[in-house]
Length: 277
Image (cartoon, rainbow, N blue to C red; front, side, top):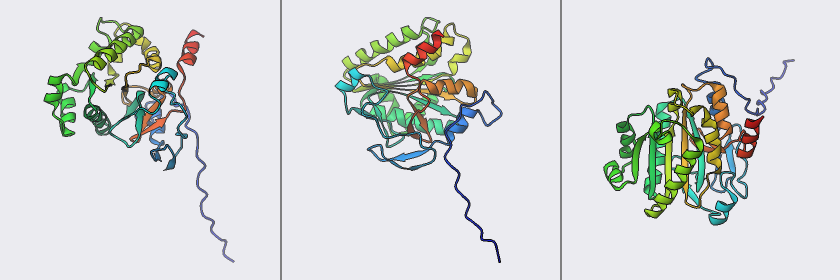
């Protein structure tokens, strides 16, 4: 009597594991488990399908928004362009990428959505030539010349924006951001939006070793004026262990073109306590 062939049992979902400092596994281990995160949700945050689900239903208050801002803008969200997801008015997101093509699509659509929403948009470039960044805006059927002439769009050198004095000071950078929010609001824009390349960290600028402190402080730099920022990390430059630390400081990340709630997020007070020990 033939032995019946049983269908293969589907593998149980596994929780992402902390990556090791190993560049041999693809570009880095962190990028590997990012590729396994994919979810599809409707506008109410309900999960319609996906792989490893790390995106629970939306909480009553998004963790990227302070109590003060939430009271002022309880339902205020902004279009991110590259996805049907919407970002809280005070949003701090992270893009870890291995493909320049994928990065270009996400960043271009993120900036274009900001310009269409009459926001002030800034791109902080480290390795990408300004002409290339401008071409991304042109490719989105927007006039980059008009946007730059009006002051709505600008490409800046990353190290000039992060370290204008030649030294990186996280608290001074946060103060400059808050000052910019006020200037942009007074100019009549609906919000401010920025994309920063983080490759400048390899240039040995004094104070750059404090960049994790800055990433954590960004989660406390709330202001009633809508603002959103995207930190870009090239997985071909940063090792897996470093990228895991980066992940821990971003409440939300971009994975497979979707905004994903980050299960590894460490709140600013917890980060500060860990630094003291």
